[in-house]
Figure 1 (cartoon, one colour):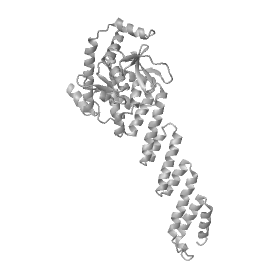
Figure 2: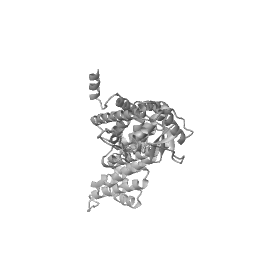
Figure 3: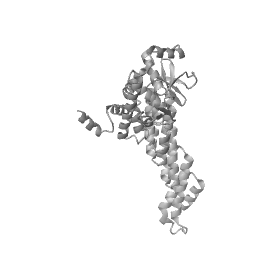
Figure 4: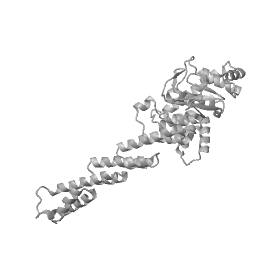
Length: 389
């Protein structure tokens, strides 16, 4: 049976059943899905393997091409080393449930604490504390850099990533729905029972209820990680705008707080559409723009960009059509003026009444373009030539 399982996953993009479940979940995401059921399914996946969610989404939707299947397998093996090393540390912890709970109660008297869970929270904080030196904070990092063998290397990651690792280790013992996220502008921390946990320092914190601070369900970490695309890897590696848009759309669908993800979604649509316009793929750009926020304005701008492209390349018929769609009627008239002069050049310099009939088709075109341009001088000139036909 194990041989068949390995053979099956050899021919799929997934390393194992957990990644496959994550991949199928993301594939089926849609704005038309029931949000409460979708988030309930996401919470189950977070409980089963938040690491698989993070690694798969970084590989598939954030352009981390180094996270090929073989590399992800190595990282999962490192994660197992972390889990085993932490379990040994946790088992040897000197804190007892009453003392662990009492410490939190002293810091947050209103906190609702379950003593055994309090021991686990303390063990996680002690394990990753700055004094032990097992973990090093580094801004804008990928999850892969955090998943190292702790017996040989230092774990390096930003706040999103270390929170994700805390969640993974917590899920090995208790239900992750015990936890929440404390989200502040540009930062994320954990929250348990009434007190915040600053995972980057391994310390308790009390964030003030300032504007922009929010307490969100634990599965919101998936949306936050999907939108975290500022790491140095992205600054040196090209990421498909379609992938960025897809991750932003998924974050928008999954998020409990739309205000957090709306701007990112707008930006992602803009980035993709700008990329398509730069490649002169206007029809695809318009297709995406129809689903984008402010779609009317975006579609209009795409038509305008296409029109300018055609005009500069002297394709005036195409330019006139595009300018018409964009609502720029002055430029439509300029296109017909340009077409008038293109035809005029065909007449040559020695036009006489004897040979003017040979250019009947040209003159008729000139007359039609002049009328469409609305230019009175051009209309008058074309009418004078037309009299000789």
